[in-house]
Length: 184
Image (cartoon, rainbow, N blue to C red; front, side, top):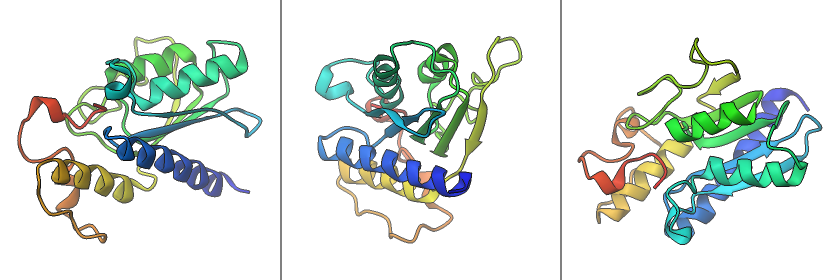
């Protein structure tokens, strides 16, 4: 299996986690940690509401699970797949965990820390660098998030075939502080 096929397969698993988060009333973001051996060592979905924990973003949940599974807080050689660009908190955790590679789907124009709003990942003054791949299944993940926020506002979901306007709706058109697209 080539890297592109593996990346898509793992992102589909992250999407399944995002769907489970949405079914539980959370913002639909999911994450998967894959080790250098190709095994899945951590899964995560947003749990901020269920756990009353502002740090329970999908990435943090997946990183914690992987650390426990591997018996080490250093996740050297691992890849993190996530459906939405990580926020500053998650980007910091990714760097501290020494994740080798980050693959994310949709950009987060309100809280993204991989270049959309901030550039925490691979900042030149930080001591760890990770390969960052963005845009894998971005339209699908962006549409899932857009439709979640539209439904929350009682509006009609977007077409399953996103138009060029769909990414602009990511997180909604208004500035509701409770609905920042990030992760909760």
